[in-house]
Image 1: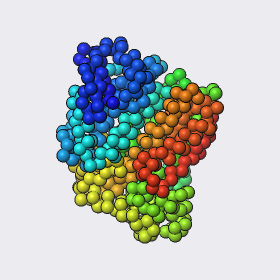
Image 2: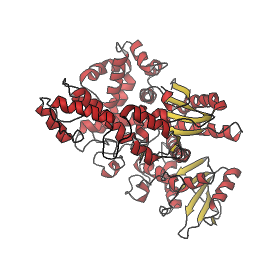
Image 3: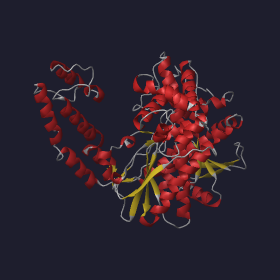
Image 4: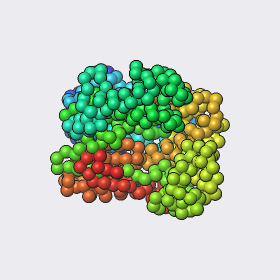
Length: 544
């Protein structure tokens, strides 16, 4: 059963019970704005329906603030984006429909000491939208995959809101100490930290340029060229090609600068409140299905400050990450038994044992080249060896690349499809921090994009299933009175759960078993393994 929540122009909330196809099972119920949360609480406890609403950030934060966590939902906006672009919905009313309000991402809640929720106007006619979506799914030859994908995507939206509400436990004292150790004491406004100034002094002396502004790429390139260092940019990889006394201190300066800008004292002042960092996740923010972040840099949390993530008293952090997720997903997509067998342990060591390459580093480079389209250099030289050892896997990515080069669409295992070249509307889905699809007219570059799309997108689907299964297991333990463990951080193939001390081992088992179940959901009984590194620590910096 589905229960649709819809805010009326009056401000009241309408609840409509529907069957799986979106047909009403009775008259809608209208409750006042002050009462809808209690009504959701009652129905969740009585029947645990699958809730449907226009956009999770509009509804779930208010429920969480009132102590209500729903088990399941359909996020109509996220589902709309998938179904509108999926090759599995061709012929439906939704497929290829003009972009509109349903395609526009909504803002995440603002991280403050007291939760403030701004209720924007509801998206238009959610009941009609739900029925269009159900018709598209039910008529699709890929229905089973789409059903799982929509459920996983929507559950991911619940998890994102819950992690924002829970927050990452963060010690401002530890963070300040880490910054002081690396940068020196907090400087006055407009001044550089001592460690950065020390490296800058060395750079200026080596370049004989006492007025050099290292934060201006144009000034820095001119100064380097005057010293005989011919560069076209200040990127790390290009600087590393040169031997000069200025290079090493310059690289150290740039590294410290990145830390200061991304996670320095200003970041600490802005993003950590009441001992919590509350990232603003954007589920489905990348066109492959990966999450993005609209603030706080949650997806780029450097190891230099991870020790500031300190578990609350009486709790530990259960940190888990999956090894070589994308190559394992490729093996499952291609039904490549040889690659699956190589992944029984460390997949790259397994590739070495297969005889395809001589070293683990070669195996890693060749595999990344296969998935990202590196056809030159060492990776390109090794690709024919991979093709002989793992013909199914290599054929899959090569076919995806050819499809992209010809302007075609590729899809993930569950049915999320890539945009076409020239689809400007689809390209808007790429957040600023990603490279996005290649420029129009570059067929080979678009082929590299589609080659990786099928693998990265299916890996994102596996990760969503992992999150969803783990969330269900943690909720079941809490319902059984065993204790409350909460997901507090997620990064593509890594999760962090805060758990009571006495629940740590059980939660570690849950994390592992959730990975196994996620593999079965996507690949059935295929002989695939998704081995995890699971550590129980007091602070995130102790992991890995």
